[in-house]
Structure formats: structure tokens, C-alpha cells
Length: 212
Image 1 (spheres, rainbow, N blue to C red):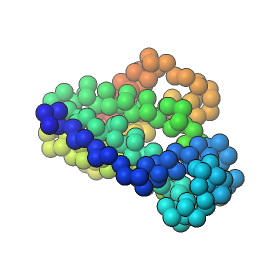
Image 2 (cartoon, rainbow, N blue to C red; image 1 turned 135 degrees about the vertical axis):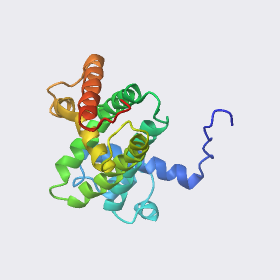
Image 3 (cartoon, rainbow, N blue to C red; image 1 turned 60 degrees about the vertical axis):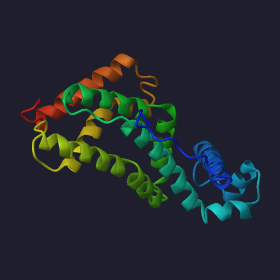
């Protein structure tokens, strides 16, 4: 195809059923919390028996992990569906930072983050599942881009996985905290653009190579 975008094959009945379960389970977890949500409750909302639900997921923990993994994949796809440019490094990185910020500041992503934070003290496996599917995988993806940036002189040589972690932390910073704590429930476009630009400037002051 000329666009270079591969069309997704149509989903089978089982795939569509699984997607429906994940969507309903996410709504239940966000509404009632992990501890208060049972497999029976989810099965009732799905409209099938609990036995049918267990055909897809053997436990609530497995179902929750699948829900989180699915949402993390959505984020990664949106972030990385367009190749980051290397010839115009700073503007490209700034656009990426803006895109990342808009995603993590969305109401749904904030709700998921709050859920993980609230439940992980009692259920540490939930925090581990989220970290491995979300932040860690995102850092690995970005580190691959930074590897090429190092080779092209846009970044200094170094541990690109660490660089990726610093970059994401700089982008989220205070704006993410203010949204989480309802200090700034709806950050403005100007705040997002300013935060993205400042984050890239600080990042490149520390890691920028001769090419920027």
C-alpha cells in the first residue's frame, strides 16, 4: 500500500468478545476499584456466565493485567505510529513531547493512573504489571530512537534507556501532578506546549549532541 499503513485483519468472534470483556472490565475497575470488583460482577455486565469469562481469563488478576496491557498498547501505538524524524531533531522531539503529554493528561489515563496508585499497596502485582506493560515498554521504544539519535550526533553517547526515563519524567513533571491532584483539572494547550518545549530544552541541555 502506498501509505505504508497495514490494514488490520477483521477480528474473529472470540477477539471481539475479548475486547468487549476488556472494555467492560476497565469501566468496572475504574468505577469500583480493583478489590471491590468481582469476576461475577464483570460476567453479569458482559452478559454471560462466569464460566464463559473464565474461558478467557483464569483470574481477576489476569483480567486486570490484560486490561492494563491493552490500554498501554493503545498509548504506545498512538505515540509511535509516526516515525520520529532525525533530520529535524529538536522540533520532532518537541512534537512528540506534546503528543505524550496530551495522552497522559487525558481523563482516562489519569483515572487508570489513580487506580493503579490506589491499589498497588495492597496488590503490588498490579503495579508491576502496569510498569512492565506501560512505562518500561515505552522507555524501550524511545531508547531505540535515541540509539539512532546518538549514532547521528543528535545525542551524546550514553545509556539511552536512562535517557528515555529522564525524558518522560521531564515531560510529565508538575503538570501531571497538578492534574492528578485536581489542582489543574484541565491544563490549557498553552501550558502543554510550554511544558513540552521546556522539557526538551532541559533534556537537550543534559544530553544534546553536536547535531543540535
